[in-house]
Amino acid sequence: MLILGVLSGLGTALLQSTSYLCSASFMSRYRSSVRLVVFSQLVMGVVGAVTLPFTLSPEVTRALPGMIPWLVLWIIVFSIGQFGFFSALRTIEPSRMSSLLGLKIPVLALMYTVTAAVPLGWIRWLAVLLSCISAVGMNWSGGVRFSRRGICWLAVTLVAYALTDLVETRLVTMPAGGSLIRNAFAVGALCYLVLGIATLPLLRRFRFTRRQFVLAVPFAVTWYLSQMLLFVCFGSIGTVFGNVIQASRGVMSVAMGWLLLRRNGPGCGETGISGRMWLRRLAAAILMMLGIALYSLAERL
Image (cartoon, rainbow, N blue to C red; front, top):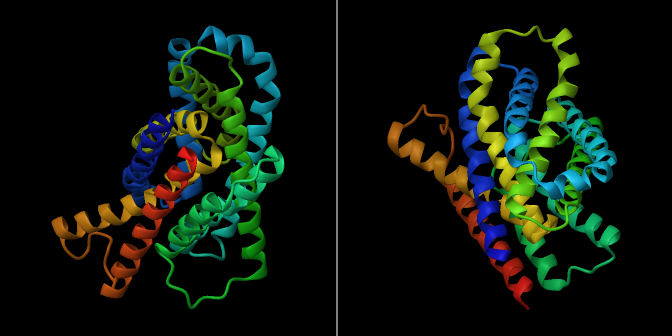
């Protein structure tokens, strides 16, 4: 279970980092992250509808009546998180917002401790702290004061996203027995099918065109696959450790940025990054690996 959880968590991080690169064609054409979210969710709804019949297991079918309230709750907290995220972006730069989302790890750890009534222990808390420092420090450049409104929307985003992860873990662990991987893929397909349907009313604001739908496919497919692996990860090793592993996408993003810079030179999207910034990113990457190693050690003790 531990190896499966770690590998699926690393796969999630890799696919999430890749999905950001896959969004370039859509963003260069429409320059709207909200529009990308709408059309990618429509694509993922279609993918969920196609894959659900092949992944739906008897265990998930039996658990479905009890899962319905949790599916509704997932839609609510996920939507609140998305709304909070884009509201925060009005006052917080995207690069800094991406780093600040690392604060979700301690928020999630606190929620888990309260809801599960199980203490994490000092080793896990140290791992959480190292992962949080790494995630925030990966792209943080400082020197900016945020507005009170931006801080409030950031808090809403962190809490809603943390609740989303807890609900996802609850959903994927509800089916009793069977293959964890198949159950996770079925639950994920069900979630994104329902989300795609819930997104349809937004087409009143964002007129549907085949071009937008097609351009959203690369991002949507890589993101969808990352979420399927995330469900497997949460079902295998739990929400907090899964998030610690998932935060390694920052390390992968640094590696991808370095490879792009080596291959394409200045102008590939990594311009303006000083040697000091690269050293800071390297230090943050080392902290992240230490955090993952510590949490993994705690799981074995």
